[in-house]
Image 1 (cartoon, rainbow, N blue to C red):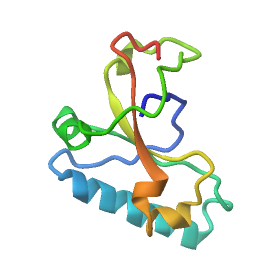
Image 2 (image 1 turned 60 degrees about the horizontal axis):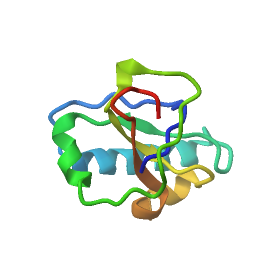
Image 3 (image 1 turned 180 degrees about the vertical axis):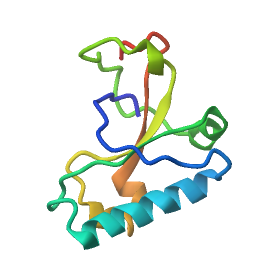
Amino acid sequence: MKKSKYLDFFIVIDKSKTMQKLIDEIKKTSGDMARSGWAESNGGNISLRLNPENYAYFNGLQPKSDWVKLPITMPEIAGERFLVTGTGRFLRNIEVFPEKNIGVIEIDELGEA
């Protein structure tokens, strides 16, 4: 939950969608990418910047690591949370087991970790 990385594929989502609809959209997108051959094996990531009204959905999660310092300070995304696909995960598996293949990262309040 607290790991931070450069994110390389963003989905533009309507702000009015519920969190479950957002997860369903990531499931569909990852399945479409895998079936279309747009991602080699487990290559490719999907990252979604969450709106603050969606944060409560994840408030019960426990951090899986300590803060990790970012290679550059990014104050423009300080305090933001992102729903991301896991490193080394097969995109085709996200559709079937999203709970094992996607997670949330949070950027600290200074945009440093």
